[in-house]
Image (tube, rainbow, N blue to C red; front, side, top):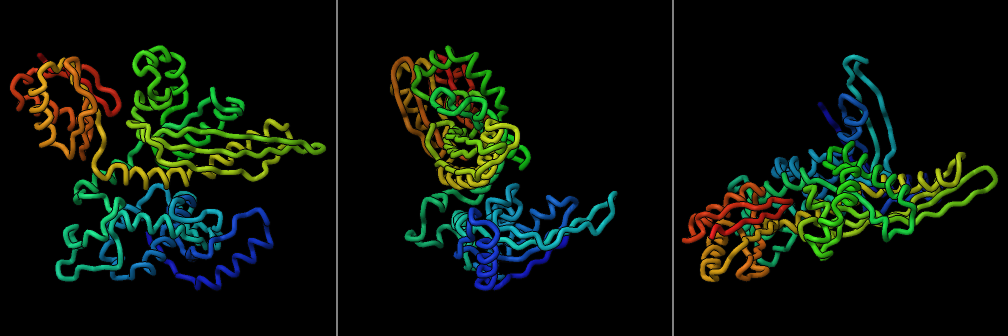
Length: 428
């Protein structure tokens, strides 16, 4: 696949696009004059892949202008991993500004070769956040032909987005983790003022967006079934200390759960029906229930010739579809920061009557992980929070290794494994 791009004068293009936008639609968002506008071309086996390739070529053009050609080549491998090969190009551009310049199949029906040329504004803030999080700038270590080590950077330039003390292998693990996250989108019908059916349509739209863009999503039917069938189990296990959506997300191994809320209005004028929706997507980290952020969005006025309910349904679905790229972008950036010290796992050890033995066991865990915190300790059980750059299987192995290294706990065995939580019996 061959690509080409050409940077366009920002001031000229912004002036032209501003005139077009103001002349064509007063309710269409105007292009932010701080964003760079580029023309770019992409090729692929379908119009969709060719379009996405063109979007990323526009992003590549901006990055080259931002850090220089030499630095762009120097950081090429990292840029490929964290930006250029993304499954969601829309997080780095403003899709509402896209203008199609050319769309053509240069091949045949059996062997297509699509080309797509466009003009689009790059989402400067999103690109710069990703560059900063991965320490990509205009610096080039010419002596060693590699990015400068963490130790070469002054403490003043180190921030939370620099991933703390994570080394290259840890950062690579986190990138892979972020790319394979599972999302669970649902609604809290008990607190919502909107009809449950409209919220379910919004959830379906969100899951459709996730799966069609290569992300993992929990089936809404699983969520509904677990909420209804296991409510008593939820109350017994948690005492309502956590929300039922968080509990369901843990049971279904979702990394991020998203709560959809909506306020919908409608009206009818003669034979035309209108609907409008204000939605909010609130994102939470599943293991802790920590709020990662929220994405509000107000839909355009939806129109239907069927009835008012159909117009409101269209408004909810269109609002959710428009908000999803922003939700994914925010959740990825914030989860990277949240995981900068390793993935958070909970370990519960039942039957821990010997405090000194527990202390030795904790030390063995600490030597094998990034950090260990004791949440509670009693003769009945001890509750740890462990940070580790690795999957749950590795944490399980670490617990057994720590038990083998702790006199008296050699017979430790697993009782329950759920989400990012492991429960063991001390074997005493």
